[in-house]
Length: 195
Image 1 (cartoon, rainbow, N blue to C red):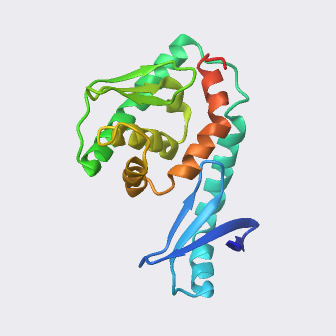
Image 2 (spheres, one colour):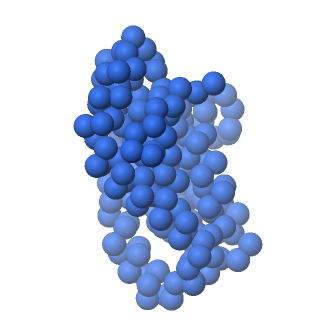
């Protein structure tokens, strides 16, 4: 059974591991997670969370609001989609470069397309294509798709070896992939992609 601490009415899942520091994160759907050294006492973790309570409350609230709105908005116009690409693409490309360096891979041309059934693809020549709807997802979800496609520069299938590379850079990949499965149709609808 997972260890849960409640701070100001917010449940925070505790994940203990062989690490030295405490970190707090809020997932795209508003779930709060604190990562702690395996030997650290619960009282110290609770004190850390109390120090971060204002930050935690604000980020959980914002994430839940974004998640709830994801599929409840009308489709974007072509100018709105262009503005989205202009605004979000530079940061996405910067993070793509960072992950490529971490994996020790290169890639070719990056394109955005309206794809009905995929979030990304990688050609044998190293070209990367991403679904434009991905730019509406939280940054960590975008990152998981970017890492997935970059790992195809190392392994062009979905073998265990491929996923070892994915998890080495994106340990929360399964959770982020599940978020995309749950909210993806709403994101696609926003850019005019029907199921």
